Image 1 (cartoon, rainbow, N blue to C red):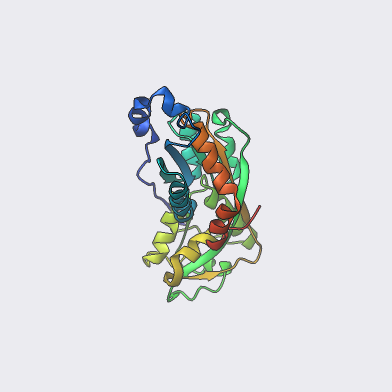
Image 2 (tube, helix red, strand yellow; image 1 turned 120 degrees about the horizontal axis):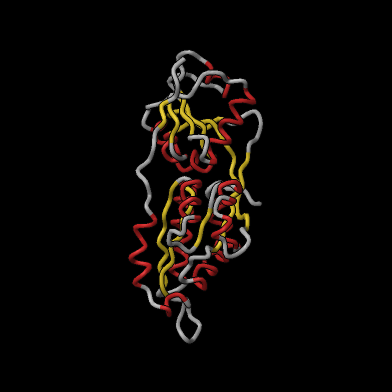
Length: 258
């Protein structure tokens, strides 16, 4: 039996931001001007599956707060959590599961708050060349499928789904995060993949979405980091994500409510 190919993404080096963080002064760390208005920049490290929604949330937040800049870093939740735990500069961490968030427990300034949920689904290319009808189809000899590496939240859910369905064939490759998994399907490099519902929706007509027999859901927590140099802005951004306006953006993208 062929073993799956492990694919790795180019590392996102939050440590590369360290010189920029060091250039800030103590006023930046206090996050605002004397009159209490928010100002300065923050770095938000977020799971890859949050890319589109956090880009929109950051844009709306910046529009509401003149002089505030939100820098976004996206990668696998485990990678970002480990970097935060090692002290990489950053202000906010949002992961795609609670287990990854726990890996950054020593870097958390507050208790993490769950702000969204997401379901795992099966996707195929738009024309579904392998005629995949469900997760059972992944055991077919002519079907190639891809999943996230198991250390990523999407990979852990995928492993659970495959085990529950009794699928014995190995995936063609293990992708570093859900976006990489989706890309392999969209580019017709795989007949199917297990991704989050929000990513399937974001892909639009490029994929077909197939529900799993058993619903598998993950929770998304967000937290302020100890190493934040702009805690007031960071907390304000977290509050915005948790607000009705933030929930509207998340719901429109297909996320569930906690």
